[in-house]
Amino acid sequence: MHAATAADREAVIALWHAAGLTRPWNDPGADFDRAVAGVGSTILLLRAQGVLLGTAMVGEDGHRGWVYYLAVTEAARGQGHGRALMAAAEAWLRARGCPKLQLMVREGNDAAIGFYRALGLEPQPVVTLGRFLH
Figure 1 (cartoon, rainbow, N blue to C red):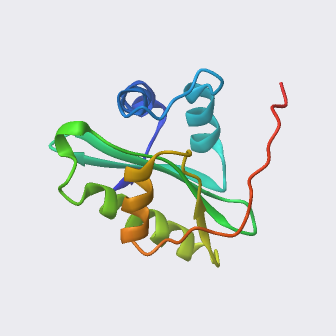
Figure 2 (tube, one colour):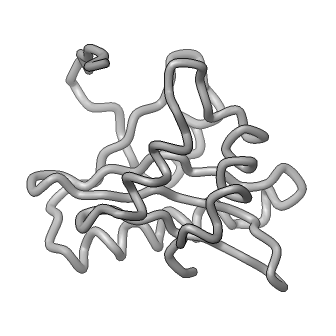
C-alpha cells in the first residue's frame, strides 16, 4: 500500500469511474487533488505488478476519520483487496489518533452496506445533511 501522487491521478479517476463511484455533481479530479495536497488526507493505492487494483481516500477532520472512494477493479474483486484497503485506512487513522472511522454509503447500495457490516461497521443513528457551496 502506498499513497497516491499526482502521477496516479488519471488511473485513480478512471478506476473511480469504472467502479461507479462518481456522480455528475462531484468533480473526482478536484477530490483527488484536495486529498493528495491535504495534510489530513491521502489516497491509498493497492497495486500488483505495477497495476492499480484499488483505492481508498482517507482523511481526518480533527474529530473523526472518514473513508471515501473505496474501489477495487472488477477483475480483482472478491480476493480480499477491499478488506486490505479498509485495514490500511484504519491503520492510517489510528496512527493519527482518530477515535472513530466513519463513511457514507448511498441509499440502495446493499452490496456495499453488506461489505462494511461484515467488517464490523454498523449503521449510525444520524442523518447526513448537506449543501453545495458553489
